[in-house]
Image (cartoon, rainbow, N blue to C red; front, side, top):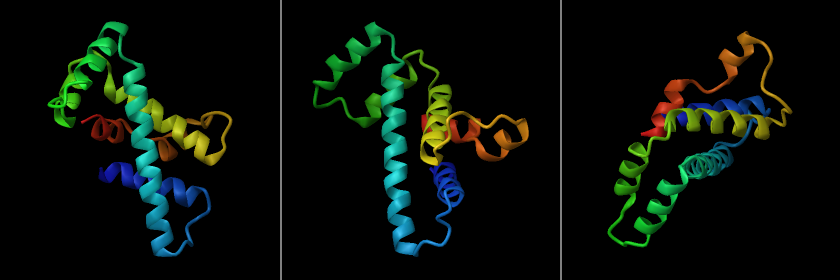
Length: 124
């Protein structure tokens, strides 16, 4: 989760909120992490093939199908969770910073975009 926290810290700074009180910054950061993780979860579910989505819905009705089993199901679903996480992080960044499109230069993309390592951590 450290890479996700770094990603969110970078967004907060890029937005111009680098001088926030520590408590306010931590609250904002916690909220943003939760929102990002919710969006990644939703994007991963939306990426499921229809048969897997139906299977997951059925399994979620079982109270013994806990978070660990959901994660295992998603890992074995055939969805490229790393790619889903990366794309979601990019969209999150663009929306938060109010950008209409992704950065156009390769140089700025490397400096500002989440890395595959960030996405891999989220996909775990």
